[in-house]
Length: 123
Length: 124
Image (cartoon, rainbow over the protein chains, first blue to last red):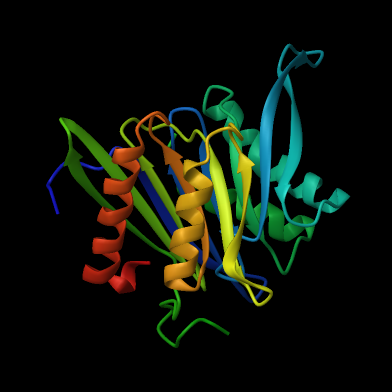
């Protein structure tokens, strides 16, 4: 193994959310932030959260979500937008690639997951 | 459930980095081990250019593979994912973010991953 420093940085954590072990891994790429949020230990559904050129009333860009792999259902888009938008905004509107494998997608659980993501800030 | 008494995870996701110089260029590898699957990124600059997913199927001796992100004319991520899925029997996510012109480089990269698989099977 050569000794070159890794050029990809990542941080991870885990916590019990409503009794379910939840792991988060955030990985920084120059064109993407890759976030895995899993309650199954798997990547699960892949969702991209991308800022659009269209802006809202406060000149913040709007975000679009796309399911790249897995079940394309409305709740996936809701979770993806909730978990990915704030990261993209903080990371200079970089697109987010999310791996979601959730047993619990309640509002309360999603809120706690956002805190977990914040504790793994790589951007 | 998957949490032991002391709060340590029994089957945690783990991350592993290594790198190698091929033909005057340093190629970096980033592996994320998951449950029954792993993600591997290969590149010389920190770009996520594409993503292929591959897994074995009982209907075919060759694992199924699909490109979920990136340029479909670049076959390198798909073929690497397929070969790693075949070798490891796991679901494999591959991002191959190196220039697509160089097929000899992709062979070196694949052999380097296989070497790492033998040296550190627990990291994949």
